[in-house]
Length: 433
Image 1 (cartoon, one colour):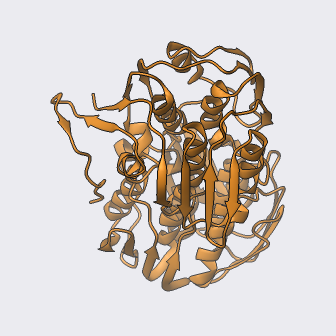
Image 2 (cartoon, rainbow, N blue to C red; image 1 turned 180 degrees about the vertical axis):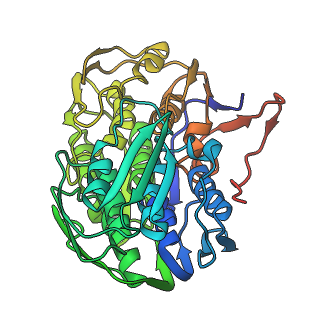
Protein backbone atom coordinates (compact mmCIF):
# COMPACT_ATOMS: atom_id res chain seq x y z
CA UNK A 1 0.00 0.00 0.00
CA UNK A 2 1.34 3.43 -0.95
CA UNK A 3 2.08 5.73 1.97
CA UNK A 4 3.14 9.25 2.83
CA UNK A 5 6.01 9.37 5.30
CA UNK A 6 6.06 12.72 7.09
CA UNK A 7 8.86 13.96 9.35
CA UNK A 8 7.17 16.52 11.58
CA UNK A 9 8.30 19.87 12.87
CA UNK A 10 8.41 21.79 9.59
CA UNK A 11 7.42 25.44 9.26
CA UNK A 12 5.90 26.24 5.88
CA UNK A 13 7.24 29.32 4.09
CA UNK A 14 7.12 30.55 0.52
CA UNK A 15 4.55 30.68 -2.28
CA UNK A 16 2.12 28.12 -3.64
CA UNK A 17 0.04 28.19 -6.83
CA UNK A 18 -3.53 26.88 -6.56
CA UNK A 19 -4.85 24.52 -9.24
CA UNK A 20 -8.25 24.40 -10.91
CA UNK A 21 -11.29 23.59 -8.79
CA UNK A 22 -11.93 19.87 -8.43
CA UNK A 23 -15.62 20.32 -7.69
CA UNK A 24 -16.09 22.38 -10.85
CA UNK A 25 -13.99 20.14 -13.09
CA UNK A 26 -15.82 16.94 -12.16
CA UNK A 27 -19.11 18.47 -13.35
CA UNK A 28 -17.76 20.35 -16.36
CA UNK A 29 -16.12 17.24 -17.84
CA UNK A 30 -19.39 15.23 -17.93
CA UNK A 31 -21.21 18.35 -19.20
CA UNK A 32 -18.85 18.38 -22.21
CA UNK A 33 -20.78 15.32 -23.43
CA UNK A 34 -23.60 17.72 -24.40
CA UNK A 35 -21.40 19.73 -26.77
CA UNK A 36 -21.25 19.21 -30.53
CA UNK A 37 -17.72 20.31 -31.28
CA UNK A 38 -14.43 20.80 -29.49
CA UNK A 39 -14.34 22.07 -25.88
CA UNK A 40 -11.00 23.48 -24.83
CA UNK A 41 -10.89 23.48 -21.03
CA UNK A 42 -8.06 25.30 -19.26
CA UNK A 43 -6.89 25.02 -15.64
CA UNK A 44 -7.92 21.37 -15.35
CA UNK A 45 -6.53 19.94 -12.09
CA UNK A 46 -4.26 16.91 -12.52
CA UNK A 47 -6.02 14.59 -10.10
CA UNK A 48 -7.30 11.04 -10.31
CA UNK A 49 -11.00 12.05 -10.34
CA UNK A 50 -10.60 14.10 -13.53
CA UNK A 51 -8.49 11.34 -15.07
CA UNK A 52 -11.26 8.82 -14.36
CA UNK A 53 -13.97 11.00 -15.87
CA UNK A 54 -11.94 11.67 -19.00
CA UNK A 55 -11.38 7.94 -19.40
CA UNK A 56 -15.12 7.35 -19.10
CA UNK A 57 -15.78 9.91 -21.84
CA UNK A 58 -13.28 8.23 -24.17
CA UNK A 59 -15.07 4.93 -23.65
CA UNK A 60 -18.28 6.66 -24.74
CA UNK A 61 -16.57 7.69 -27.97
CA UNK A 62 -15.17 11.11 -27.10
CA UNK A 63 -11.74 12.23 -28.26
CA UNK A 64 -9.60 13.71 -25.48
CA UNK A 65 -6.18 15.28 -25.93
CA UNK A 66 -3.87 17.25 -23.64
CA UNK A 67 -2.44 20.46 -25.07
CA UNK A 68 -0.35 20.95 -21.92
CA UNK A 69 -0.49 19.71 -18.34
CA UNK A 70 -3.57 21.78 -17.48
CA UNK A 71 -5.34 22.29 -20.82
CA UNK A 72 -7.39 19.65 -22.61
CA UNK A 73 -9.57 19.41 -25.67
CA UNK A 74 -12.68 17.23 -25.57
CA UNK A 75 -14.61 16.42 -28.74
CA UNK A 76 -17.82 14.51 -28.06
CA UNK A 77 -19.25 14.93 -31.57
CA UNK A 78 -19.02 11.19 -32.27
CA UNK A 79 -19.97 9.98 -28.79
CA UNK A 80 -22.58 7.21 -28.76
CA UNK A 81 -24.82 5.84 -26.04
CA UNK A 82 -23.56 2.77 -24.20
CA UNK A 83 -23.29 1.64 -20.61
CA UNK A 84 -20.58 3.62 -18.86
CA UNK A 85 -17.81 1.43 -17.38
CA UNK A 86 -18.83 0.20 -13.93
CA UNK A 87 -15.33 -0.24 -12.50
CA UNK A 88 -14.47 3.38 -13.22
CA UNK A 89 -17.78 4.93 -12.22
CA UNK A 90 -17.96 3.30 -8.81
CA UNK A 91 -14.69 4.98 -7.79
CA UNK A 92 -15.99 8.52 -7.75
CA UNK A 93 -18.98 10.44 -6.46
CA UNK A 94 -19.09 12.65 -9.57
CA UNK A 95 -20.20 9.69 -11.69
CA UNK A 96 -23.76 10.81 -10.98
CA UNK A 97 -23.29 13.87 -13.24
CA UNK A 98 -23.38 11.42 -16.14
CA UNK A 99 -27.07 10.88 -15.38
CA UNK A 100 -27.78 14.45 -16.43
CA UNK A 101 -25.34 14.60 -19.32
CA UNK A 102 -26.31 11.22 -20.84
CA UNK A 103 -30.01 11.99 -20.47
CA UNK A 104 -29.52 15.36 -22.09
CA UNK A 105 -27.41 13.98 -24.94
CA UNK A 106 -28.90 10.54 -25.59
CA UNK A 107 -32.24 10.52 -23.78
CA UNK A 108 -31.06 7.52 -21.72
CA UNK A 109 -28.55 6.89 -18.96
CA UNK A 110 -27.22 4.01 -16.93
CA UNK A 111 -24.78 4.85 -14.14
CA UNK A 112 -23.62 3.48 -10.83
CA UNK A 113 -24.63 4.87 -7.49
CA UNK A 114 -22.04 7.47 -6.36
CA UNK A 115 -18.73 6.16 -5.03
CA UNK A 116 -15.74 8.14 -3.78
CA UNK A 117 -15.24 9.02 -0.13
CA UNK A 118 -17.35 7.33 2.53
CA UNK A 119 -18.26 9.86 5.21
CA UNK A 120 -21.97 9.32 5.44
CA UNK A 121 -25.05 8.52 3.43
CA UNK A 122 -25.28 10.57 0.26
CA UNK A 123 -28.71 9.92 -1.17
CA UNK A 124 -29.47 11.00 -4.71
CA UNK A 125 -33.19 11.42 -4.13
CA UNK A 126 -33.09 15.10 -5.13
CA UNK A 127 -31.24 14.19 -8.34
CA UNK A 128 -33.91 11.60 -9.15
CA UNK A 129 -36.71 14.04 -8.28
CA UNK A 130 -35.24 16.55 -10.72
CA UNK A 131 -34.84 14.06 -13.58
CA UNK A 132 -38.38 12.78 -13.13
CA UNK A 133 -39.71 16.34 -13.18
CA UNK A 134 -37.89 16.85 -16.49
CA UNK A 135 -39.76 13.86 -17.95
CA UNK A 136 -37.51 10.87 -17.28
CA UNK A 137 -38.40 7.47 -15.90
CA UNK A 138 -35.77 6.74 -13.25
CA UNK A 139 -35.21 3.49 -11.38
CA UNK A 140 -32.47 2.29 -9.02
CA UNK A 141 -31.73 -1.43 -9.22
CA UNK A 142 -28.76 -3.53 -8.13
CA UNK A 143 -26.54 -0.53 -7.53
CA UNK A 144 -27.30 1.11 -10.88
CA UNK A 145 -29.39 4.12 -11.84
CA UNK A 146 -31.47 3.65 -15.01
CA UNK A 147 -33.03 6.73 -16.60
CA UNK A 148 -34.93 7.21 -19.87
CA UNK A 149 -36.64 10.30 -21.25
CA UNK A 150 -40.23 9.25 -21.82
CA UNK A 151 -40.48 10.71 -25.33
CA UNK A 152 -36.77 10.84 -26.18
CA UNK A 153 -36.17 14.39 -24.98
CA UNK A 154 -36.43 16.08 -21.61
CA UNK A 155 -38.87 18.94 -21.03
CA UNK A 156 -38.49 22.00 -18.82
CA UNK A 157 -40.10 22.02 -15.39
CA UNK A 158 -40.23 23.92 -12.11
CA UNK A 159 -38.23 21.95 -9.53
CA UNK A 160 -38.07 22.75 -5.82
CA UNK A 161 -35.23 21.00 -4.02
CA UNK A 162 -36.38 19.78 -0.60
CA UNK A 163 -32.83 20.17 0.65
CA UNK A 164 -30.04 22.41 -0.62
CA UNK A 165 -27.89 20.03 -2.66
CA UNK A 166 -24.84 21.01 -4.68
CA UNK A 167 -24.82 17.76 -6.65
CA UNK A 168 -28.52 17.84 -7.48
CA UNK A 169 -28.40 21.51 -8.49
CA UNK A 170 -25.54 20.86 -10.91
CA UNK A 171 -26.97 17.61 -12.27
CA UNK A 172 -30.34 19.20 -13.04
CA UNK A 173 -28.60 22.15 -14.69
CA UNK A 174 -26.67 19.79 -16.96
CA UNK A 175 -29.78 17.81 -17.88
CA UNK A 176 -31.92 20.89 -18.50
CA UNK A 177 -29.75 22.88 -20.93
CA UNK A 178 -30.92 20.82 -23.95
CA UNK A 179 -34.45 20.22 -22.61
CA UNK A 180 -37.41 21.71 -24.42
CA UNK A 181 -38.69 24.83 -22.67
CA UNK A 182 -37.73 26.52 -19.40
CA UNK A 183 -36.51 24.86 -16.21
CA UNK A 184 -36.55 26.68 -12.87
CA UNK A 185 -34.58 25.24 -9.92
CA UNK A 186 -35.72 26.66 -6.58
CA UNK A 187 -33.81 26.33 -3.30
CA UNK A 188 -30.70 25.81 -5.43
CA UNK A 189 -27.21 25.60 -3.96
CA UNK A 190 -25.00 28.67 -4.45
CA UNK A 191 -21.40 27.39 -4.36
CA UNK A 192 -18.75 28.99 -6.63
CA UNK A 193 -18.43 25.79 -8.68
CA UNK A 194 -22.14 25.98 -9.52
CA UNK A 195 -21.53 29.42 -11.01
CA UNK A 196 -18.51 28.00 -12.82
CA UNK A 197 -20.55 25.19 -14.36
CA UNK A 198 -23.19 27.70 -15.50
CA UNK A 199 -20.51 29.91 -17.04
CA UNK A 200 -19.04 26.91 -18.87
CA UNK A 201 -22.43 25.90 -20.25
CA UNK A 202 -23.23 29.47 -21.31
CA UNK A 203 -19.87 29.79 -23.07
CA UNK A 204 -20.90 26.75 -25.15
CA UNK A 205 -24.26 28.26 -26.10
CA UNK A 206 -26.56 27.42 -23.16
CA UNK A 207 -28.91 29.92 -21.51
CA UNK A 208 -28.50 29.56 -17.74
CA UNK A 209 -29.38 32.49 -15.48
CA UNK A 210 -29.28 33.05 -11.74
CA UNK A 211 -26.44 30.69 -10.78
CA UNK A 212 -25.08 31.82 -7.43
CA UNK A 213 -28.59 32.59 -6.17
CA UNK A 214 -31.23 30.22 -4.81
CA UNK A 215 -33.24 30.34 -8.06
CA UNK A 216 -31.69 29.21 -11.34
CA UNK A 217 -33.51 29.52 -14.66
CA UNK A 218 -32.47 27.49 -17.68
CA UNK A 219 -33.95 28.12 -21.12
CA UNK A 220 -33.39 25.01 -23.20
CA UNK A 221 -31.48 25.31 -26.48
CA UNK A 222 -31.29 23.01 -29.48
CA UNK A 223 -27.55 22.35 -29.25
CA UNK A 224 -24.29 23.42 -27.66
CA UNK A 225 -21.25 24.38 -29.71
CA UNK A 226 -17.54 24.17 -28.98
CA UNK A 227 -15.53 26.87 -27.24
CA UNK A 228 -12.83 27.63 -24.69
CA UNK A 229 -13.31 27.87 -20.93
CA UNK A 230 -11.02 28.33 -17.91
CA UNK A 231 -11.97 26.64 -14.63
CA UNK A 232 -11.87 28.74 -11.44
CA UNK A 233 -9.20 28.16 -8.76
CA UNK A 234 -9.90 25.52 -6.10
CA UNK A 235 -11.36 27.10 -2.97
CA UNK A 236 -10.74 24.02 -0.81
CA UNK A 237 -7.17 23.45 -1.99
CA UNK A 238 -6.42 27.08 -1.14
CA UNK A 239 -8.09 26.72 2.25
CA UNK A 240 -6.04 23.61 3.00
CA UNK A 241 -2.78 25.50 2.42
CA UNK A 242 -4.08 28.38 4.53
CA UNK A 243 -4.69 26.01 7.45
CA UNK A 244 -1.31 24.32 6.91
CA UNK A 245 0.43 27.69 7.10
CA UNK A 246 -1.44 28.62 10.28
CA UNK A 247 -0.90 25.24 11.94
CA UNK A 248 2.85 25.19 11.33
CA UNK A 249 3.30 28.82 12.38
CA UNK A 250 4.56 29.63 8.90
CA UNK A 251 4.02 32.33 6.30
CA UNK A 252 2.70 31.37 2.87
CA UNK A 253 1.59 33.47 -0.10
CA UNK A 254 -1.25 31.60 -1.80
CA UNK A 255 -1.55 32.58 -5.45
CA UNK A 256 -4.17 32.10 -8.17
CA UNK A 257 -7.26 32.37 -5.99
CA UNK A 258 -10.48 34.38 -5.86
CA UNK A 259 -10.36 36.00 -2.39
CA UNK A 260 -14.14 36.42 -2.22
CA UNK A 261 -14.56 32.64 -2.41
CA UNK A 262 -12.30 32.34 0.64
CA UNK A 263 -14.20 34.72 2.95
CA UNK A 264 -15.85 32.07 5.15
CA UNK A 265 -12.53 30.28 5.66
CA UNK A 266 -10.56 33.49 6.16
CA UNK A 267 -13.01 34.75 8.79
CA UNK A 268 -12.62 31.63 10.93
CA UNK A 269 -8.84 31.61 10.56
CA UNK A 270 -8.69 35.22 11.71
CA UNK A 271 -10.68 34.22 14.82
CA UNK A 272 -7.84 31.82 15.70
CA UNK A 273 -5.38 34.73 15.57
CA UNK A 274 -4.03 33.95 12.11
CA UNK A 275 -2.91 36.99 10.10
CA UNK A 276 -4.35 37.19 6.57
CA UNK A 277 -3.59 39.92 4.06
CA UNK A 278 -5.69 40.02 0.89
CA UNK A 279 -4.44 40.90 -2.57
CA UNK A 280 -6.24 40.90 -5.92
CA UNK A 281 -5.62 37.22 -6.69
CA UNK A 282 -3.65 36.06 -3.65
CA UNK A 283 -3.69 35.81 0.14
CA UNK A 284 -0.76 36.06 2.54
CA UNK A 285 -1.28 33.80 5.56
CA UNK A 286 0.91 34.01 8.69
CA UNK A 287 0.42 31.67 11.63
CA UNK A 288 0.23 33.18 15.14
CA UNK A 289 2.52 32.39 18.05
CA UNK A 290 -0.52 31.04 19.91
CA UNK A 291 -3.70 29.78 18.28
CA UNK A 292 -7.01 30.73 19.90
CA UNK A 293 -9.97 28.39 20.38
CA UNK A 294 -13.08 28.90 18.23
CA UNK A 295 -16.44 27.35 17.52
CA UNK A 296 -17.57 26.64 13.97
CA UNK A 297 -20.46 25.07 12.12
CA UNK A 298 -20.40 23.83 8.54
CA UNK A 299 -23.16 25.19 6.30
CA UNK A 300 -23.99 25.54 2.61
CA UNK A 301 -22.17 28.37 0.82
CA UNK A 302 -21.59 31.16 1.72
CA UNK A 303 -21.28 29.50 5.12
CA UNK A 304 -18.23 27.57 6.30
CA UNK A 305 -17.59 24.63 3.90
CA UNK A 306 -17.86 21.06 5.13
CA UNK A 307 -14.82 20.19 2.99
CA UNK A 308 -12.66 22.34 5.33
CA UNK A 309 -13.95 20.82 8.55
CA UNK A 310 -11.30 18.09 9.03
CA UNK A 311 -8.41 20.51 8.37
CA UNK A 312 -9.77 22.87 11.01
CA UNK A 313 -10.18 19.90 13.34
CA UNK A 314 -6.39 19.47 13.28
CA UNK A 315 -5.78 23.20 13.71
CA UNK A 316 -8.01 23.37 16.77
CA UNK A 317 -6.13 20.50 18.40
CA UNK A 318 -3.27 23.00 18.63
CA UNK A 319 -5.35 25.94 19.89
CA UNK A 320 -5.47 26.76 23.58
CA UNK A 321 -8.82 25.97 25.18
CA UNK A 322 -11.90 24.02 24.14
CA UNK A 323 -13.28 24.33 20.62
CA UNK A 324 -16.57 22.97 19.28
CA UNK A 325 -17.19 21.87 15.68
CA UNK A 326 -20.75 21.24 14.52
CA UNK A 327 -21.11 19.38 11.22
CA UNK A 328 -24.20 20.72 9.48
CA UNK A 329 -24.00 18.77 6.21
CA UNK A 330 -23.00 15.10 6.66
CA UNK A 331 -23.82 12.54 9.34
CA UNK A 332 -20.44 10.85 9.66
CA UNK A 333 -17.64 13.25 8.87
CA UNK A 334 -15.71 12.76 12.12
CA UNK A 335 -14.17 9.39 11.23
CA UNK A 336 -10.75 11.08 11.14
CA UNK A 337 -11.02 11.81 14.87
CA UNK A 338 -9.93 8.26 15.74
CA UNK A 339 -6.77 8.82 13.70
CA UNK A 340 -6.02 12.09 15.49
CA UNK A 341 -6.48 10.34 18.83
CA UNK A 342 -3.64 8.00 17.86
CA UNK A 343 -1.49 11.12 17.65
CA UNK A 344 -2.49 12.36 21.12
CA UNK A 345 -5.52 14.54 20.36
CA UNK A 346 -8.28 14.88 22.95
CA UNK A 347 -11.58 14.96 21.06
CA UNK A 348 -15.05 13.82 22.06
CA UNK A 349 -17.71 13.24 19.40
CA UNK A 350 -21.45 13.10 19.94
CA UNK A 351 -23.33 12.72 16.67
CA UNK A 352 -22.58 15.76 14.57
CA UNK A 353 -20.70 17.64 17.31
CA UNK A 354 -17.01 17.34 18.18
CA UNK A 355 -15.54 18.93 21.31
CA UNK A 356 -11.77 19.47 21.06
CA UNK A 357 -9.61 19.96 24.14
CA UNK A 358 -6.80 21.83 22.47
CA UNK A 359 -3.28 22.89 23.33
CA UNK A 360 -1.84 19.37 23.32
CA UNK A 361 1.25 18.32 21.40
CA UNK A 362 0.65 15.80 18.63
CA UNK A 363 3.08 12.93 18.10
CA UNK A 364 3.72 10.95 14.94
CA UNK A 365 1.88 7.65 14.45
CA UNK A 366 0.70 5.27 11.69
CA UNK A 367 -2.70 6.63 10.53
CA UNK A 368 -5.17 6.28 7.65
CA UNK A 369 -6.62 8.78 5.21
CA UNK A 370 -10.32 8.07 5.81
CA UNK A 371 -11.40 10.21 2.87
CA UNK A 372 -10.10 13.02 0.67
CA UNK A 373 -10.31 15.97 3.10
CA UNK A 374 -9.60 13.85 6.17
CA UNK A 375 -6.47 12.67 4.36
CA UNK A 376 -5.36 16.26 3.84
CA UNK A 377 -6.01 16.88 7.52
CA UNK A 378 -3.76 13.97 8.48
CA UNK A 379 -0.99 15.44 6.32
CA UNK A 380 -1.28 18.71 8.24
CA UNK A 381 -1.26 16.76 11.52
CA UNK A 382 1.88 14.93 10.43
CA UNK A 383 3.67 18.18 9.63
CA UNK A 384 2.98 19.67 13.07
CA UNK A 385 3.55 16.46 15.06
CA UNK A 386 6.83 15.46 16.63
CA UNK A 387 8.43 12.38 15.09
CA UNK A 388 7.34 10.44 12.03
CA UNK A 389 3.78 9.97 10.72
CA UNK A 390 2.90 7.29 8.18
CA UNK A 391 -0.35 7.79 6.25
CA UNK A 392 -2.02 4.89 4.42
CA UNK A 393 -4.77 5.05 1.76
CA UNK A 394 -3.24 8.09 0.09
CA UNK A 395 -5.27 7.38 -3.06
CA UNK A 396 -8.07 9.32 -1.38
CA UNK A 397 -5.84 12.40 -1.16
CA UNK A 398 -4.75 12.14 -4.78
CA UNK A 399 -8.41 12.19 -5.84
CA UNK A 400 -8.51 15.92 -5.14
CA UNK A 401 -5.09 17.55 -4.63
CA UNK A 402 -2.77 18.17 -7.54
CA UNK A 403 0.92 17.52 -6.73
CA UNK A 404 0.17 17.82 -3.00
CA UNK A 405 3.46 16.42 -1.77
CA UNK A 406 5.54 18.39 -4.24
CA UNK A 407 3.84 21.67 -3.37
CA UNK A 408 4.20 21.11 0.38
CA UNK A 409 7.85 20.06 0.10
CA UNK A 410 8.56 23.22 -1.89
CA UNK A 411 7.23 25.15 1.12
CA UNK A 412 9.57 23.34 3.52
CA UNK A 413 7.71 20.17 4.49
CA UNK A 414 9.54 16.84 4.73
CA UNK A 415 7.27 14.30 3.04
CA UNK A 416 8.26 11.24 1.07
CA UNK A 417 6.15 8.70 -0.78
CA UNK A 418 6.65 5.01 -0.12
CA UNK A 419 5.29 2.85 -2.89
CA UNK A 420 4.28 -0.80 -2.72
CA UNK A 421 7.86 -1.90 -3.38
CA UNK A 422 8.79 -0.25 -0.04
CA UNK A 423 11.24 2.09 -1.73
CA UNK A 424 11.46 5.78 -1.02
CA UNK A 425 11.38 7.92 -4.13
CA UNK A 426 11.27 11.61 -4.78
CA UNK A 427 7.66 12.40 -5.69
CA UNK A 428 7.18 13.34 -9.35
CA UNK A 429 4.33 15.19 -10.96
CA UNK A 430 1.03 13.36 -10.90
CA UNK A 431 0.55 12.30 -14.51
CA UNK A 432 -2.79 12.19 -16.26
CA UNK A 433 -3.09 9.87 -19.21
